[in-house]
Length: 606
Image (cartoon, rainbow, N blue to C red; front, side, top):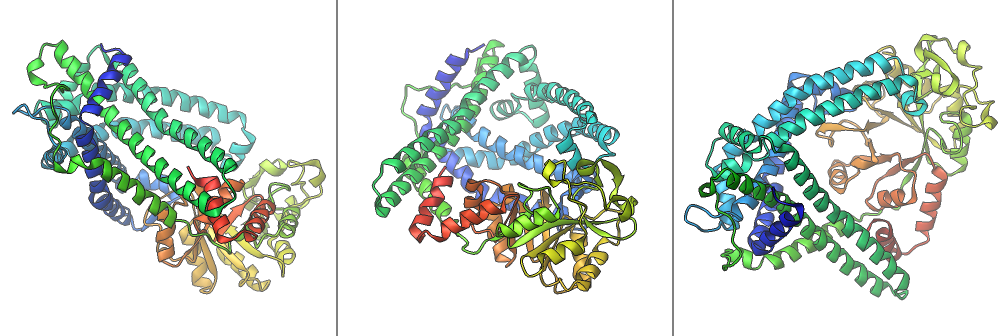
């Protein structure tokens, strides 16, 4: 078995020797991904989602979708396409560093053409592996789901996250056992088949034969293979972390010593951006090629160990490497790619000068959520809208409460729709946050509206449930009675709730809240989206802008996150800290355009 040190040296030697062709293939593959594989995959997966009767499946509906036949097919196809992309990339690197039957190394173009001709075999290899992994994983998922219902099904999930009841630890113990099972079974299966791709490529085998061949080669050595591959992966994964750390320190150092000259600072930022983008491209190339060649070298080693040298042609580094015409200038192409990447990043800088300050459940950083105290503080802190949660009691009173019960905030375990308002209106819902809020009581929607009237808008999330089928019409009737429809944005995680609201009040502004989704996000029949901050990518924002739909992000509570969201052009920020967002917006208002541009890179250069 090769030592890690020797394997590292041999892999680096191969990368250095074949670098032009490997880089060329890396570029070819990137172009293929962007122009063909990603668009085709997106179209196919979106079509599958539409087969379920919806253009978008998200939030609570996502798990139900994945357990349906169409959802299982979607998961199988998604993972297969990802695997095909990984296999394509690894296979190209392996072909380039291995001689063909004529004793010649493949050029990047020849390697790509070979893979396209054999794409059916690669797809089949990926499909077989993914299908077996999913078949073994499905019972585990069902078992974990049963354990969740058994231990935690009676609790609101938000209560579980915040209160950490004893049953949570029992559930986590089950999850730990399931994780160990998955790690052992699927890890062993991955190692068993780890040599299948090189066996299929270099021994001209079919997918099933390659899987069997890999099982033979790895028999009795899988622990050593695991240790080697994990070590290589850890080393390669540290590269982008090191680059980020290096440029972060370099950037802060330069910004502190540079003269107060906008042109000098802007030029420095541009140089740093190009250098950082180029370094990341090189690191990504080394990571992909390093993983591929480490696996190939292990395959070579096992073939040699069983005396089958004739099946494998090892790379040599003592002769000129025929790279092909395009690969000769690949370094220039790589720099151009870095410049394109930087240009694209700069174009995403679309700072919004009018960002809505939306207080999440009031100022829930300094006061208990969904209380009159939190609403008042949010208004004083400069909130444009106050986001609140609405449910109704058994006797039809609309109240502000996030969870399905008051267990977390008042110790009352009964679902809110099973109790009359008179039973809970005197409960202390503030002491859980701090003793000075012991006078806070469960507010009604009407009380909140009167406090907001003329001072801030209402961003009302309807917390629908099967036990409250009339919640939406009840909320709209109350808002109409209070004459507050025009000042309200109605939000929900469920598109069906917003559709029902639009049917009743066509002019009502609606916001679809999205935590996780599959399918087509843009183009839903809503005015705006309230998306999780992690989903607020330039690509998603561009799609939503094209539909002239607003974008609000949640929940952003730090200065760097607020600055980033403002810079990419969101329309509103939902935050627990409206006072902090007000400060950020005021500071930005005092800056000139160049200073704002530079401020962006203070928080988001790397």
